[in-house]
Image (tube, rainbow, N blue to C red; front, side, top):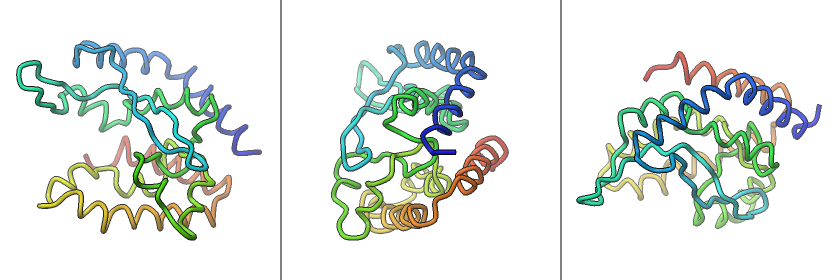
Length: 191
């Protein structure tokens, strides 16, 4: 089975089975953030091509102070990865895959050099071993005096290595294992 065929079947099946979850999660995001409920951001895709990623909005912006914070509902959406569900439509479009390196902001994957650029040959994914390892990345970064320096010197290089390992060892059954680990960690892992 080709990866693209699997991505289409898996995305369609998931959307058909859980469309009601996507709809309810979106409505909660709309009410909670008082926006259209969708967060759109430019990311780096396959071969360094830029594309737009869609997530459910989980951040509230205070109108009086422009202060941002993750809302209570937004935290639940993030904890159970419900905010990521709109990416199933991007997978159907062909810009993402179920398993692959998470799409990063410009200034990271697009600047990779040497062997590390092989990561750009892969379609970005909804899940990966790197995203599982760093699923609580925002909390990890909060504990450091210089979060950007810690990310750039420790987390990002480790993600690159994990994604390179995936590049060299990818397989259908390996992807199935990553999907099962994602489901397990999302619903039964420590919160």
